[in-house]
Image (tube, rainbow, N blue to C red):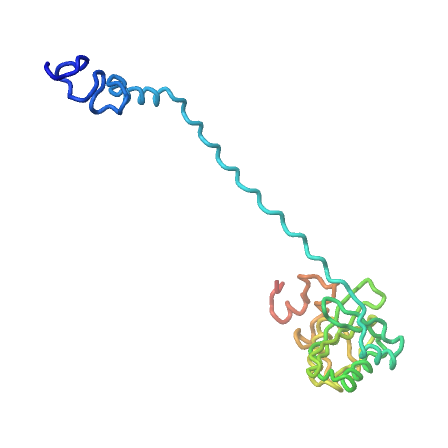
Length: 238
């Protein structure tokens, strides 16, 4: 055909060298361009399968925190303690602080005088509570505890004293009228008697009840079976 280069076959687009197609990238033979998709599919078919990723191992739980250290008993040093020791001497057996609470251990023979001194001389006008603790194996198994509060100083102090079985505790009703029912409850639950109390009798249990439930030697399910049967008409109140 006139006007065509000798190496261009008849029918080929002008300007496209022989062996190339209009749709092939520049410099890529037509046969290669035509076979490219087939080669890609074959390569994909023969490629090794991807190895599945192993499941992530769950993180271990954090270690439990260390247990807190128990409170430490520390000496209670103050002008109040010095004042009391100056008056009562060795009758103040211990003055200490435990868990942020101040307390005095005093001889039972002076407990009433110490309470009056704290009330009259040191501003502890409020008797917050009084109670007892039973240590049946001790020589003096009953520990009385009086809790006083000074509103002026915003300070609390506990006074503790030990008493033997059958030993009477001086009443605090001569200074705090509210001690009346508190002492009746201690008598009811522990059997501790208070010398000078105006009306010492049970307050929670019937007057005829036998035993004192907050003693350590009183069983958890123990009861006065005779009273229950006589007054309730049943074998057991449990």
